[in-house]
Image: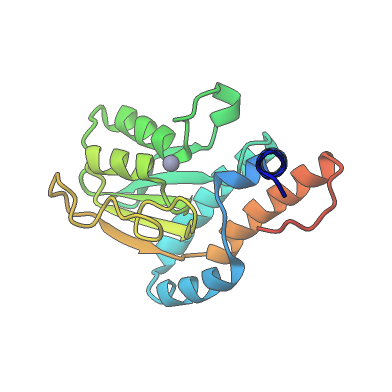
Length: 208
Ligand SMILES: [Zn+2]
């Protein structure tokens, strides 16, 4: 094979890879390897209160709203002293805003409720591990505790892929608990991508 052929093959490989990635675009927002995830979740999911479960179910309801609006189904609620003061679901497509993640919207509504951007003493429940952007917003807004459902093995910012929280430069202490109702949280995401593939007429099993 001469150099020209090598170059052509290289280019065609890149094009086919790009097309493949494009076809899988929604799935590229997060990726979970079910095998590694199962062991990861079982390591995390041993220490939840019934209150944590109750609020995670509320976050799941927010995620379901996103699902129904054809947004990647991620939901969030923020709780202070046992009361929900903020909630949100992913609205990236609807608002055409890459920052419109469930956590960012919930942090905004919680600040409006309190008329204060400082969310000290608040717990943020979210169905998927916050990304680095949201983990940064959690630090900036002084949320005291984060409880997430499914870990995000592709873009998790609370310890799974990178850790924005531990040893942060702002010296904020945030307690992080992951894995609560992880199967349900991940199941909603899987169902969403399955439905998107069916609507696109793609029945291939590309799995998440
Ligand atoms: Zn995020």
